[in-house]
Length: 373
Image (cartoon, rainbow, N blue to C red; front, side):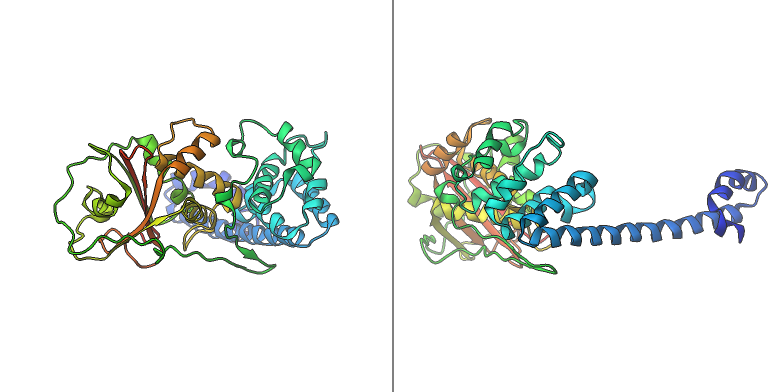
């Protein structure tokens, strides 16, 4: 087996079958053992290259200068390393650029869509565009950004989003990155403002209503939580027999047939607050963009998309609705943020519930999320 160290491949293809046929299975097993060791070493070497490459990209992205941008774009265009790990994904690189580079430099370099690479960096451009929009950049002030709206691929998922930041999207949080680290944080607790906790003891009678959420609606409602890779989530939709005033919703929610409130006794903690649209949107945006305890999220651009998707499902916007139509539904709904000491909510890391009452007061949609498996 010493020769295998010099030309293991030749032995695998030249002797394995013959040795096995002559009953020397231990020889073949030893070949496999050496191959497994070499494979493990090669995999670790690939991972190290990925870490090193990600750091090089990070250094270029976090060094504010037009030359750094030019060299970074050249590297990304020529080598196309986007598949070599999440820290090299276009959405992550775009987030770094939006955080550290000057908008004028980004507009002049990244959005210069030349003939040499007419589309290879379009995913990066799409993500960066919405990262900038979320940060309050006025697209009209930068001709290359205005031009991007004319040439961007219509099939790209982010093209559904509005090209101007809505007022309820302002003031969102972003992670803070440096050459060797990052910091981010989010709170999911029910605030004291707007509290409408129902008096205890609450009724122990369960509602006869039934969940009518289709698979499509369910997936739409939980979009932000799943994008953030949280531990668990659930979604339910109930059509009411009659119009229910917003003031009655806090007492109704704990009685609904939902796993997230199963086992909740009449005196167990159930905290709920009426919340403005911007607070609900920020909660969903942070959930998707920054992710849970064991996830880095999908960054700003896709965090924006999935927050809008979840709001669309909760507000009852029809399938295929435009952003303007979703916004109308969102603004006309009444929003609640709640927590409970039910078993489903672990109350260990991050947990929250969101409920939306439709403008006609006949539909209640609920999202529950926990970052504990």
